[in-house]
Image (cartoon, each protein chain N blue to C red):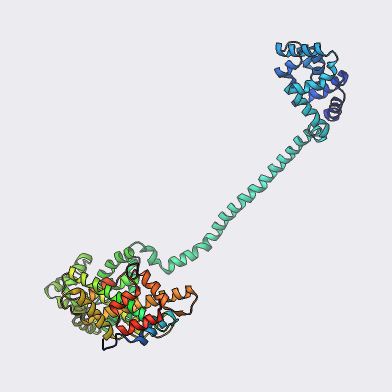
Length: 69
Length: 464
């Protein structure tokens, strides 16, 4: 990947803001890895949901339905 | 009385076993109810079989002498054998007899108790006294319950009196409550109560419309104001809405949101689309039928027709006339109700300040989109497109994810006693999310998803 996968500083700042704690030097990589796994699962669920409802593309409603608890 | 005799008699009994003393004791014992009863018992007769036994028995009870001989053969044999064995036992028997038979044992007890306890001796003496005392006590008790009864009766009477006295006092507040809202009481369960609530709710609804900022608020407010101020042109609508609201209020417990939606549903179609008014008014108001007949002919005039009849209708007609063009387009979206709820959290989330008051930056949309398309492609097989709305939803979801994940990480690090979120915390989170298990490790996941540079950095941070 020539392009940066993600801005490391931004992820660190997000986690730091939400947790009010410092983030160790390379922990953001693992956090982003977890985020990628989350995204993978989210898109998988959304695609399954959209396919069940007969939609070709993933729509906002399907994503919302998936993210709803 | 026996008060003086009994103690002396018992004292004589316990030390001296001689018969003459027994006579004296008998006098005392006869007067004692408890002791006189024992000799009457048949077992007592058993003890008094032999003349020697008669002596011992005669000492205690008078009737034991006369009855003396009969008894059961067993007792006779036993005492005869004893008499045969030891002639001189009579004197000693007196002590032993008491041991041998249960009643003698009881007598020993009685003696022991009598010798030790003068209080018991005094008890018969005092018996008349306590009899007198209870009388006094009863009298006192009689006096006391009288005193208590007035106590009990007094609070009741007082309460009654208070009620009677206070009833005018208490009633005025009730009356004041009632007077304040006589209509409320009268119409508490009738139709008029919801009218008040509906009017109040309209104020709230105007607030709701302002807050949501959803529906052409200006027209709505003017409309509400017109409804509240002048019941002229809107009477028909109000009547219908009120009766409709009466059911809604009691059923839904007066939740503002529901009421708000309910009102919006009713209000906006009403000016906008006349056919929606028609069923409501037809169902509810008989008075409006005439207007409705006109409305049926020309739906647009229904709004105008009452206003024409009204005194101040002209000013409000503009609001009513202006409302229709805006409402029909928006009313379906409002009826759905989904958009309103969705917009609010997004707006709040866009402010992006964490619970700790720290501004939260957004993850760039390009990164989110790249990841989303990447995983959507991989799973969708063919190219699945993600439109902007879906991307916004995904960004929202990712924001929620980061909030939740970072809070969890903070909890892990706090539990570990650290002030910084460490790699071990993230691995713990991954393990809890079942991303890491016996078959998959952090490194395998990293190798699968992360570029090499990040893998190297990660391995540097995690030597094992």
